Structure formats: structure tokens, C-alpha cells
Image 1: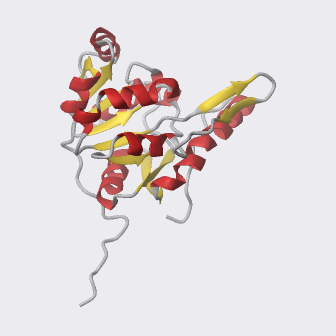
Image 2: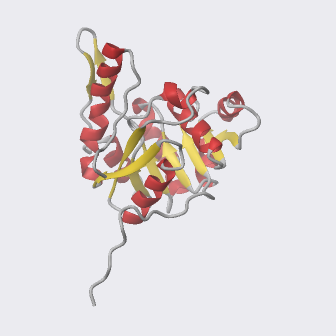
Length: 230
């Protein structure tokens, strides 16, 4: 009997998941924390310095289910952990919480980018191929997914923006993990999670952020992506 594959639109219920965000004191991490908390998720912001994490959580308002903690605590107490640290701190952060991330879905949204005056932003070479692949190499006991690279921090944090008009490309080698992250993206109004391929395709997704930055600077916009016919 032929096994019937589930529809790509059949995603799990993720409403009860606790989300940790390492690097949640920056605008991108803080914006994602805000949106997931508004969607009803308990969110833990992580930082090397717990007082900074607690301050960031406080900035989002006391009515939201957001708290701050040291990175290891946030990683240990969360079901899904988003990595939103600057690229230059990526490797060290992951190495410091490897044990706490074992068995968990780890969502890497880090973009390895550089800047050159007169030429703008550009993608940096990564020995493992991409930031997400570096995460997978450093976290062999975790299920690493690449996602949320092209989401505007400005829009995430803007209280006047009720819905995010964009799709999130989700890449990974574990179908259940990518389905979970797609479903989490869909918890944010206006946003969809769209499967974008295996993890070895993450480089071009990360690198495209440089193009989006150029678009946004030229047109004074906060452009995102929409995938048609899906």
C-alpha cells in the first residue's frame, strides 16, 4: 500500500510552544519576541547578561508574556529557540549553549553580511556554507532550521503595523522541524512560512538580505518577499 504524504499546507498546532530568542536584546530579536508574545506565546529573551535580557523584556511592556534570562536559561526552558545574534558572536553563542539546545528545534536567522563604503552590503563567505550550516555543525544534537532572515525589525516593532505583509522562507533537513517553524511564522498576522529547500540552500537566502537592504535604502521602504502560486 502506497504511503499517503500529507499536504504541504497541513501544519501542526504550535500555539502552546515557548519560544526562546538568543540575541533578543537587538531590534530583530526584540521584534520577533514582541510579535510572538502578541500571538500568545510565552517568550524568553536570552542574553549573555541577564540584566540586559530583562531590560529588553521590560521595554516590550509588562502586559506581554515576555521575560529575560541568561542565554543558557532561555535555551533550556524553551521549546523552540531562535538565534538572532550578530554574526560575529554566532559561533561563540552556539558553543556556549550546545548542551541546552540538544534535542530542540533551533531556528537560525543570522545573516553573515559585511559593508564596504561605496559598494554597500555584501554576503560574507562562511566556511560551512552558511550561518545555518555552521549552526548545524556546532549543534549535532539539535534540529537546525533557517528562517526569518528577511523580516524588517522596524515593522516588527512598530505598534501601528497590525499585520506583516510577507512570506518567510523556511529551510531544513527535518520535515517535522520545518513544518513547526512554518506554523510558527503563520502565528504572526499577515505572515506565512514557505518551505524553501534543504539546509544547504541557506546561503543564498542569507545573502539575499544584502539585496533587500539595497532595495530598502533606494526606495526608503521595508520590503519583504511574497511567493506566488502557493
